[in-house]
Image (cartoon, rainbow, N blue to C red; front, side, top):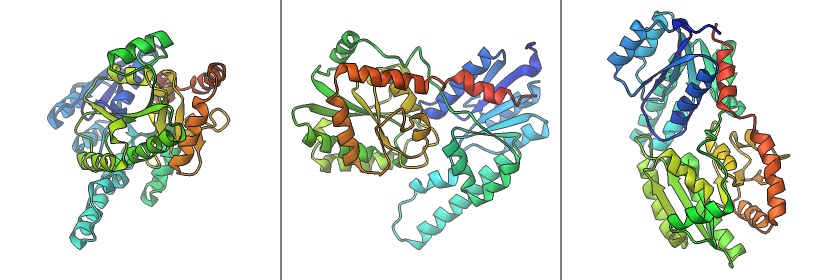
Length: 376
């Protein structure tokens, strides 16, 4: 490919944060660079700065990595300038917004919620309407998008499924010796068994079932000293009301002394918590359009247990991973983890050989390639 100004790809990202959206931006930029494209990141800028970039840049291709708070004006300007606008759908805004409202039976509250959902529905519809292509993060994400009746109108458009990837320099398996040293640095004993959950603080991450699993598995294998580590991303996208409710539930659970909450750390430090853990809990029941944490955990050398829901089963099929429960029952997940922990080291290594083959197709280069095919 001959590199020139027209082959530059601009990424417009809402704001820098620790989370899935940021990971996609960083990963796709790296993937496009490997494909021979120049990239430019416009991140956390004002509306005026974004518009100025669009006007003065000769780039033809704009990838929009945005959320429901993002103003629509720059996008309209980009369309008027004749840019090729690729819209990445991280989630359905009207569905995700429901967690912002507490259902107290109040008519005014219910009316405000419905008006807010309508506003977000029309806003996301407008973005999709004027986009050149729509990018979905999984088959589940695409089906979720088209489950909204109004969005079925966009089936005529080019809809691309890209999946995600991992930074293999950051998320990687370490030796048992290195694991013991790292645990010591973090104040964790060798004999402790660590269950891990990583993600933004919000209802759909379902940290509550993680607490239930911790409680049940401590009863199933009382000889082991289990802890649940919740590594929460830090930023404006967190739902702190949910965190308050979660803390109350932890206090009532009876296992609060075995729960650790970590937040405000960099991606490289998050990776260390994967490396020192024994099992990862992927418990999202809905609205999880991909779940990069599943890949991050597996590349860090720990198995993933959870529910056969959202996009998780597209990463871990039943053939390659026997530990996705089809029913949303924490006790069954706890029993599967207990079964795994009782396996020999040889059996565990055999399991990971199969898993490494299953996840090798998920790379940022592959993701970027699928979008790049449409840049003509």
